[in-house]
Length: 57
Image 1 (spheres, one colour):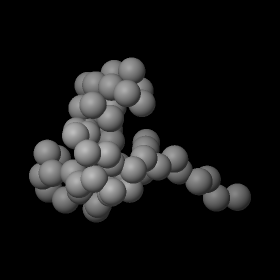
Image 2 (image 1 turned 30 degrees about the vertical axis):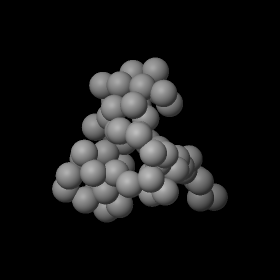
Image 3 (image 1 turned 60 degrees about the vertical axis):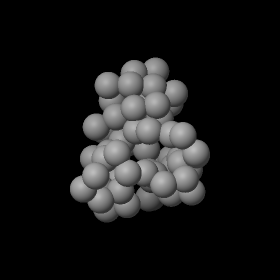
Image 4 (image 1 turned 120 degrees about the vertical axis):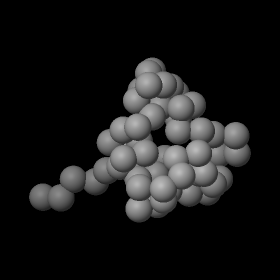
């Protein structure tokens, strides 16, 4: 059986900080979101683009 990870579609104005705060109730978990998506985001954690699909850890 394969687990299906949850995903989140980046919206205009989102930051990893705001995504972590909204979804986990803890903005300091933004590195968890980043580390799960380095292949999508790249090396600049500040550069996320509306429409990107992020995997949630």
